[in-house]
Every structure is written in C-alpha cells, then in structure tokens.
Amino acid sequence: MKWHLFTLGGHKVYLEPFFLLLIAVFVFMDLNSAAALPRQLLWAPILFGGVLFHEFGHAVAIKAFGFGPSTIILQGFGGVTINETRQNSKPGESIVISLAGPGASLLLALLSFGGLVAYKSFAGENALLTHFLYFNGVVNVFWAVFNMLPINPMDGGHVVLHALRKFMPMRKALYYSAISSLVVLGLLAATILALGHFGIILIVLIVMFGMQNVQVLQQLKRAC
Image 1 (cartoon, rainbow, N blue to C red):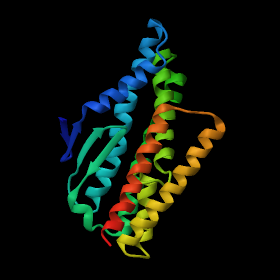
Image 2: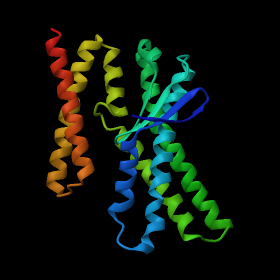
Image 3: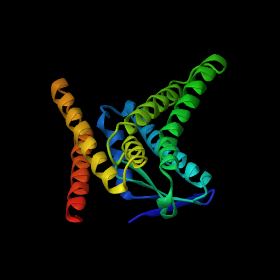
Image 4: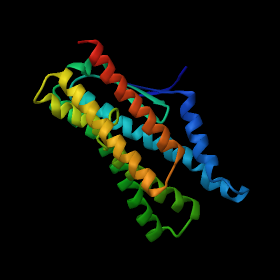
C-alpha cells in the first residue's frame, strides 16, 4: 500500500505507511514533556525532507544520463528510487548515480548550516528555527556518511558493486559485494557491542541488511 504524493520533473513520489511510523518513532522517542513536543515534531520535516532530497539526487542523476524519470518511494527506514531503464547503465554511470544521493544530502546540510549562520547574523534568534536548521544539517551529514558505508543495499554498497563490475562479470561482482557487506556488518556489530550502544533501529538495520546479503548469496548459489 502506498499513496501518490506528487510528481515533480516527471518523477513520481509515493509514500508508504511504514515511513510515517518511522517518523512517529523519532518524534516520540525523546518526548518527555509537553514543552518538548514542538522540537520533537521537527523530526517530521527533517526526515521527510532529508530522505526526499536524497532520493531526488539519485533521480536527477539517473535522468541526466538519459534514463528518463524515476519513481521515488518513501518507505521503511528511508527511501528508494526505481527506474527500470537504468538496468543497462555502465558501471561508471551507476557509481555517479549512487554517489548523487549522499551528495544531495551533503548539499542540503550545507544549505541548512549556511541558513543557520545567516539567520543568526541578520535576523536575531528563534530557538525553534535555530534548532531545525542545526539538526537538519547534522541529520543530513549523518545520513550521507551512513549511506556511504560499503554495505548493500546502501549507496556505498552499490558503489562497491559497480566498481567491481568494471573488472568482473555481474555475477561475481554481486558475490564479492555481498561478502564484503557481511564483513562490514560484522565489524559494525562488534563495534556496537564493544561500545555498548544498542540502538534498536541500528540493530534492526544490521539484521535486515545481513539477511538481504545472505539471500543474495543463496540466490547466486541456487543459480549455479
């Protein structure tokens, strides 16, 4: 189930209910008083705008390479940009497309931090707006860096996959990218255990990404 929100530049944007649940989790996880509600509600535009801007980065790059408009779906723990015609993209094109999402996130962060400096310099101070601009910048920097971890199905994992495609067939590239993803996930899990930080969302992501990469290996094995 998904709802069509709007179409921009030929790109259709859809919203799945689970994305709203994700926003609700962030809004309520640190809500300890009624006074904190306005700040906590800022998670809604920060997450919605950040994920949407990130996915539009991919969509714009895909269209720039001549593959036409894409479909953007805000879902689960983020978003996905779908374009069936880009399956024939060259490895170099696919790498640029993968990097365009984190690049868009960093651009949004830069605009937020720049807006924060300009606002505090010329327009006085509004605590809520200052909070929004600051955390919008921080969240989008984190989102860009996190997405560049070399783990499938994140952007960093796609960069590894398409870099491997330059030197080997797609089948082998899928195999080695899945193996490297599992290694990085194992190191990430070990780091979390060592530091004692057990964020439920991060744990769910590690398990989910691990299962996805194991499934890739199983599918490759069955296809032999």
